[in-house]
Length: 429
Image 1: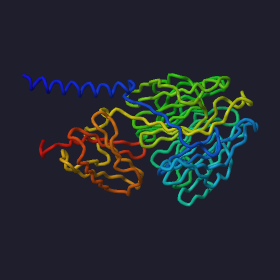
Image 2: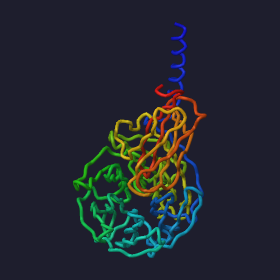
Image 3: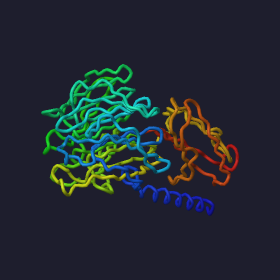
């Protein structure tokens, strides 16, 4: 009986610790911590951004926005290195512009559209390896404030406004053939919306179809079927927001419901699996018409303006900040059910003091491999860098770790996969 009580006490303590850990998370099983990184060399609004191999490429935007009549854009290319927390400048874009969109395909960044009073159809490509720009076939329509996203090496340019109106149109650009194809349109004409990709589907979130009509609507496009669906609306109607995906969730940040008020700094998350929204704590700084990327369970938010320069030309501020938000998803809700796209394995497992972790990636890519304890606390980083295409193996030997359950998380791009590790005191325990 005494022995049973002792075991029960230990189990109770473990349960209390686990519950304490999850009580630090919000109801979505996530916690959020923002940290300010080195500011951009140039404060910009309505810029675009792409992530590639440990660097963020911030392209164009405007350093003084509407003060130049709404048609002024800058050609800056600002490059942020995540490892060194430093900025550098690359070859400037041939056409200085803002309100454009961009996407990376096969180490080339395509910057499309832009402008304001005179929207553009320009399509310019930046080759990351050579650091050079080239001009590609322009869009069939002039458009600014577009949504741009890449799926399966094709780029989709959606919505935006032209000379007289907002559009629902959706046009696909094929970088391989340098050609455009018209696809199914959204049900709603809009611009200034957030756009993100999850499981090969493109989500458009919020936006506006007039200066006084902010939207909550969420529509999702499936390139395989060329069809759109309407999903649950965002809690806060707003335009000039940005959206990024981490795993199965989309984070909608910033924006404003009206040009006549400052940005309220909204931060909301959409779960694509449950079609539900949750309102999170506001952003550390209010912003609209910013840029954002995500990588390795982190969100990077940069620049924008705190209020509309057209309405507040003397008091609005164009921002130069870069924030990193570390998003920790509850370990328990990650997959262990055989859905193993990276063939992620540990052998032996259980192990006494050492095991080998192996995984397969389809192309040369930046990966991170981390170990968490049963409380969800990160205790080790085994890898953080570029790995070659194919099967990779990493030796894990931590003799000083106590016996027990651990979780090993592999992150590559916006995908993560977690496996359980069991360290024992003897074989077969």
